Length: 253
Image (cartoon, rainbow, N blue to C red; front, side, top):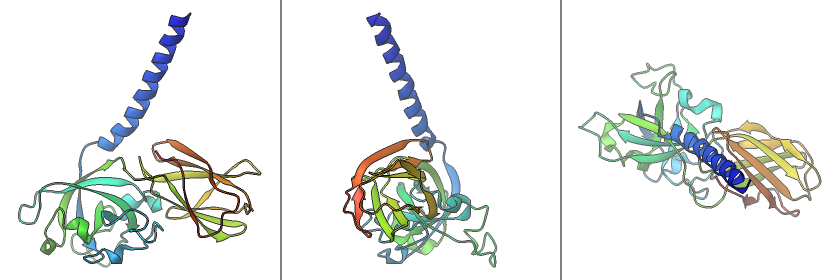
């Protein structure tokens, strides 16, 4: 009987390992072609804020290896936080060797007044990255302006836990979720006050998630699920005396 139990446990562990491996294998899928430009200035100050809602990318831990995604990649904001490995491709005049990893932090809007191959770089269905200038200069020369790239999704590596910044006011809790490792792109969130049960949050914009319940004076817990279906639960991340405007750190993928 003991042998049978051990065998069952071993098989279960093997299945779980296969599931986890399979999830991450998606990130290592083949390289895809696209193009990249740059914006934001030499110090990337022009990349702050943005359509994902992360605000100051320095203090949030994203730094200057960031990208604004075209419509085809942005997924109406659900791709915020996803990570991509990228290299300049097939342009020996402008390309530099090596690759970079960037995090999606902004949206590159289409410009339908320009042709897709002449200024309308972010028009659908183009897969385009408008990189922070310091990131672009790691793979291509400044004078290039635009270069062909190969890219692929990769797992995000972040320092510390998932960050929950609580904004809004009573009956309107707007929580920015940032610094997410693994898949990086949050697709669903639940919140629980210490006096109640789990409640689904709705995505307001970018990676800002809202709850219209009164949660003042309660310790807060969060469940965060990313696009690969994995979930991290952070219990009692915010103490009962939390205040709007504060940031708390939870678990991590």
